[in-house]
Length: 188
Image 1 (tube, rainbow, N blue to C red):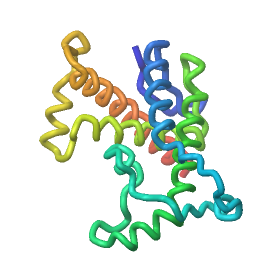
Image 2: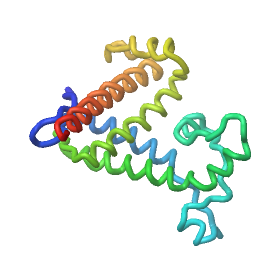
Image 3: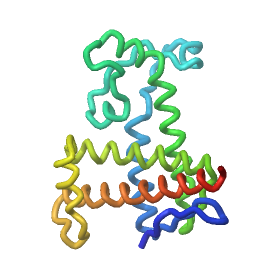
């Protein structure tokens, strides 16, 4: 059974069972595959080098749109321009954090540096955003409905299983953020 992240002498540590690590690795891999930019032949190498993507468009998948939202709700042109300038680097940053977190899943005990904790926080947040979109969490009432699912033996369908996974990743992220806050307070 997972143990919450805690701040101590070794830094921020947590513990995950092999099945929990496999679950997180699978979720992380899924989010990475969602964020992988399409390979484009004939792309301007200089534009790619500096992160410009003039052929980018708003994602069709709602979960990817939640990870890469429009900058302005009512201004499609401004959102597109911002997306062209930033989406490639945002995708790369998110993928980097997800991969860094996945590397820590090789051992039962996870020991995080401050940079590792930042990567984990970003990775768990992105996993939770995707799960929240798949569960249609739109407001506090939806979140409360999902939070009520706490017993793994009651998971009868995909939605209840996803709700349990969402609750697990939420708990894990909350414990990580608390440990990060304790770490910051101890360094003051």
